[in-house]
Length: 144
Image (cartoon, rainbow, N blue to C red; front, side, top):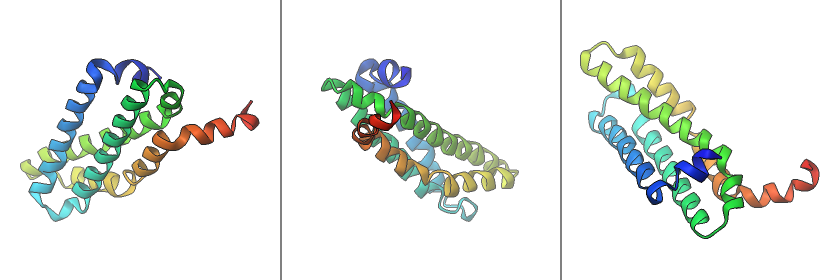
């Protein structure tokens, strides 16, 4: 809730957008390296960052339009989405440094595993952020 209602809207989202740009730089470095050991890491990381960007934009638009309850309904999946993207990006960043040293096979393998097995969740989480409020409201009858 704090992430969505307080931190995200700071400077109309400029800080989060800048941070997302930094994550895109990491994905670009993986893509530029074009090393076979990374598998589809760059593609998966770029897709997950796109999911984070779309969710961020939607949450900012919803809050600006006064649809705070809809934004709040997406708070938990947004936090998970953000965490998964950070996991993928920072594992990639560590693997890039290790691969430059020639000592990174384990880090590259872990990075690839996370990208190819965990980052696929971000598309579903984006859908929950953007479209989950209506179904959550409909479920109130059973959740109350």
